[in-house]
Length: 155
Image (cartoon, rainbow, N blue to C red; front, side, top):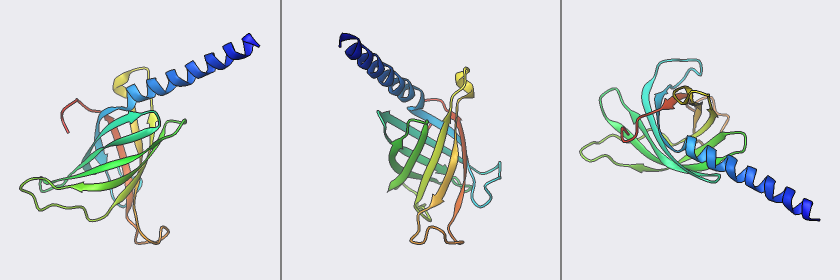
């Protein structure tokens, strides 16, 4: 009986350590690019995200840098799954002081965290979709996002 409880405690420690490690590596500032239209594009607008991960809960802010210099800032929240994938939904637009820029649509995101032995090679990659009433609509906007770890305080 003692072996059973020892085994359960060991499994619990391993799972807790896994969440703690993922939280450590995923939380923080990421930057890259966001595309619209082609899912194969490799050039897009500059995109940043700041994530706070606690257990399987994820919150943060996204920043899309427009060609005219405006920045669209959105509050996001979602969930981190055990396979290192993340689902986020935009919750609220954060108006920038002195700017009339606003989002054209509300998005949801699906990312996968790819960890490398070299921290500089860690990536968050995935896709976004416009949230619409008819999810299979051919007019629904979507695109790709590719990011690497950014420097803290840059967003």
